[in-house]
Image (cartoon, rainbow, N blue to C red; front, side):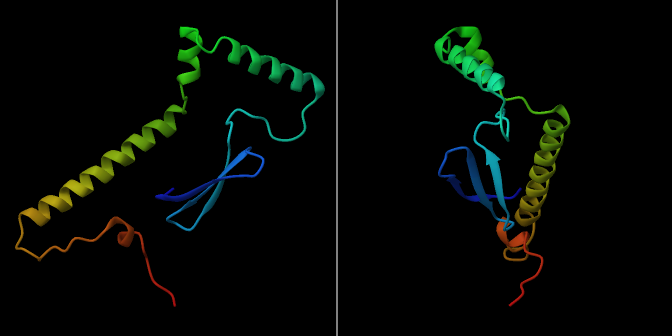
Length: 121
């Protein structure tokens, strides 16, 4: 996903809609662990009970620690880290090329312009 330009909540506050630089609109669950679709009465009761427990003990240090964590699968985490390193090294290489060449020889192109493949009118 490229740069996010706009973010809106759905009217029922269950979803978040985001619009990005690559002209995509994505729909996200506001509560990532929430189950989609109809719930059985037993599941509803269990979810509300768990929510009340979290609310009641939210100031306990161990519960705070658990609630603060955001777990991402290790493959996704490593891929994102690798992509950050690659993009940073490209930027560094381009900046060094610009610094060590004649003035105006290597023009500065904004990141948003680099992503455009072709313009159709």
